[in-house]
Structures are given as C-alpha cells and as structure tokens.
Length: 242
Image (cartoon, rainbow, N blue to C red; front, side, top):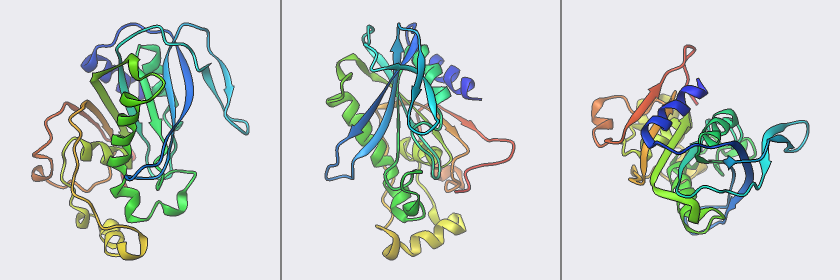
C-alpha cells in the first residue's frame, strides 16, 4: 500500500532518478503560529544505507546527513494519524527518497506519540493544517536544503487525522458536528483548547494522497473548493475514526 502512494506522487510530480535515502532530524522553531515542530527528513543519497539507531532498539535504514547532489527536488510532506509520529510511514518516505524526492514527516506538537495527553484537545485538530504550512515555510525558507527544493512541486501524504489535515490543506470545509465524538470535543473547547478555525488551503501543495481521513466531510458541498489532484484510500478494516 505504501508503494502505491509513492507511485501516485511519482506520476503526478515527475521527479528525477535517485539512490539510497539520506536521513536527518529537523526542528522547526516555535513562532507566533505555534510551538516547535520536530521532524524527520529523507533525501536521495548516493551512499549505501546503514542501520541508524533512533533510540531504544528501533533502527531505520539510511545515511545520516547525506550530501544532496541533485537540484530542484520535489518535496513531499507527511502527516501522521492519532498518536502517531514522524517515523510511522518511514517505508513510504524511503521509497520516495530513493526515487528522487525530499520527504519531511512531522510530529504534530499537539497530537503525536510524544504528547498523547493533548490528542483529544480541539487544538490537536485545528492546529494541524498550520503545522504543515509552517513546515513548508521552513523547508522553502531556511532549511538546510532550501536551495535544493523545487517550490513548484510539493505533494502531501496523510493518514487518518493526517488525511483530514490534507483535505483541509486542499480547501475542504469540515463539518465537525457531523461526527459525534468531534461534536463533543469542540463543544468542550473551552476546557481543551481554542475554538475551531476556518478551513485553510495551501495552493503550494500540488498533489495529495489521503488515506482513511477522519470523517468530517460528509457531502459534496464540503469538498466543492478542492481542485488539486487527490488519490483517496479506504482500508479494508476502516480507518479515520480518531
């Protein structure tokens, strides 16, 4: 399934050839729009991958801080689901980096495995699109590879709440009361976080792969403003519930 997502974005954004995946840790500084964001980056790399320890017994294949030889790399941003993390879809990131993309996967500050206590707060949903926009701003502005990126070719992959995030960035208009758990969540926002924000699209993102999105877009009217190419997945067991 992850290779299928990679194939879609490859066809839409048409990158050049790549090699093994370089890997690096990033931190997007806190600013007026939100707290610091931790992220992982995968890039094309000519060196042979090694097993990189990330703490505990978990390792990923790759090359730390591998020099990037190519220019004008397409950029893909990954958004994880409820209680997920930046490395949750590392296999897809590795495939894309091997194919010539730069991939950045973020930990959403209010909604990741490192801060699960805030995952049921309203801010865990409302801040997500802004998190992605801040990551793109950073990558195109002051990141270590900013000069290597092609700002005209940006894609997105999101699962569950990450799928919701992508649809928001594509211009969808959510109907939070449509899903009872979210209705309760947002009506308790005075306790848990800020009130819902208006949908915010990002036209810099040219293609989306959305997997099992949280179901807050019940009808065609909620998706009327979406014009970017989207491939939508629905798993056999069903997802997008959290």
